[in-house]
Length: 149
Length: 409
Image (cartoon, each protein chain N blue to C red):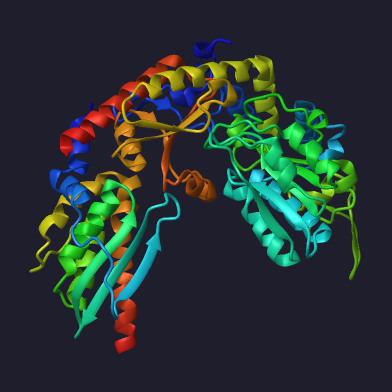
């Protein structure tokens, strides 16, 4: 088995997030709900965000999908919690660049577990799995941002 | 039938993918193309590319002969009464949309019913949803049996005197089920409805006789039967087609054009607006020659054998769920499955690293996925160039997939 290749995709930390997802569930009360799906493969995510004073106070997700899409959602919620909206969007940009195999500017952002998803960029067919949750987050915080402006 | 020899005629299969010899098990999505089809396209573009049905020059005549010759090949292939009943389209989707938009809009009104089934491909669902909305007709779904088959009892119960159109796939792209089209058509006709057949997954794999099936319309695609992409067929009984209005207007389909009124050409050309898919039709003709030379009956029997072999080997894997009938004689050459605790996308990625191409996802059949209570599945589909060796490689790939995922956990 050409497992060397596969091991760059299926890193231990990804599998850990897949099996033990963080922030799984639905936020109640005044939270923002974003539903998104990947029409070509059937993956779907429901993201609930609690935004307070320009910050992501809390985030949870529910959904169905492959190891990459679900672990990415788990890592994303973990990463954006406590960040302000600007930082969350910046993180999303870094993630998108990472998926495209571009150089990305970490600045002083703490990428944490997210870096484990770097290998996905070598599997073009799976990039859209990894970006689903991030797109949902972007959509959520952008509508909120527009309302504020 | 010698699959090993046939395989030699498909140059694309002779390559390595991710360092392994390619095992192509995604023919239900699209089939590969044999040398005679590739050469027919090459020859057309090199030697007689020209527009058809117009002008008097020699190339134009050769192109017209090639295009209309392909229509005659299609007519024979499905045993239509006349080439007037054979319309070239872009594919199955366009064919069904044409029936829905032209026949459906005129013949349906409030209180009428359209009957389809839970196993349909989106291309045989959405055109009917749309026409139902436009006309006020009701869309009804035939239920499925436990094993995914359709029972004629259910057909008799669902199809009523209000039913105007019954539209069913002949072979399921997910369950591999082969539906009793002839019997369903009979029930439809007894109730005064017409029978539309989605032949996308049957035309490549078995002999179709539209007169024997007594279907009113049949839709299929060239690219799933060794032909090029972008060409498909709509067969329709002349008595319907004659009364139907074209859905596309422009060049090629007209008889006389006035300032405010125009008239249409006779059948089948009134449905072929614009420069037709000339190369595609010629390529499809070559694909039909190729398949008929081998024999559709032999292809069908061979694929049954492959399916039976695959079912036996795959069901021996622990944690394997196979969808559709367990009885291999009831199914066409494809196996849709899931492995416990491994998402089908992950299955497909691990197999791809082994050079094995399978499909993962909802297979354009979301209502069926709902019925199966899954969000996605993996599918291995076979064609005349696949061998038992391909299936052995699939099975060992699946065993490795399971091992790989239990290791990383």
